[in-house]
Length: 298
Image (cartoon, rainbow, N blue to C red):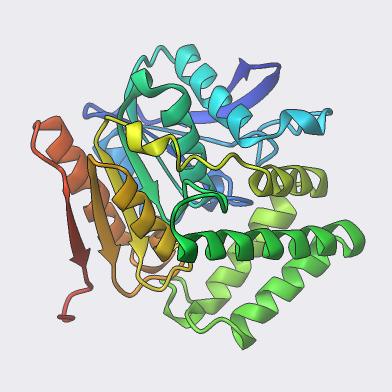
């Protein structure tokens, strides 16, 4: 296992050393690097790809001081990791929490961002100009508070059992996941039981609830920005708002996908990202609004 000592902790990472553009991807909440779906192998082949476990996730350390677990600190850790690896500037992106961290990174370290990829995520936290997006973010905070309560008082096993039961009984989209409902269940158990501690889960959960609202800062971002989101994702209203706020952005709606597009339409997500990076590298105008649909759909 390979670690970098960054900001007082050991961060686990991997790098593919591909010959194409350097791409740094950040995973979602409670879904460390091992939780990426198989399509990530194609990213390894296409790019000089850097993956890593965020502070308090996976093989990266859970700090003794919970106050050091925050989205701005996550972004600072990413900057430190890039410095350790000798990467001055890269395509920076992530899914869900990874997108939140990437947005924070772009606001705090804009000179280090070749382009920004915000996938199934939000750059706000209830203080933005769009009422529908603010409501989604309020609902997210409420849900995370409830999940933290379960983990703290009943344990991670009970949390996983309840979430997996929801996949079967309450989630209208789980059956469309590429790995099926049972695959979602297995991944949820692995990520939260095998690859995460309760302390790390609670610290990261709190960090996301308390993250800065960036909607006053994102309009000044000058780098090319991809905003991609599944059509069924609750974050869709946030994605539309972020696209409206960021002048140099492309909005890609991925049909047939709920939250975490790589789990539902991995090939379409790969296409959205690859086409965008190719356009950035070629100096083409990336702005626009489009949809990607599975074969056979209108």
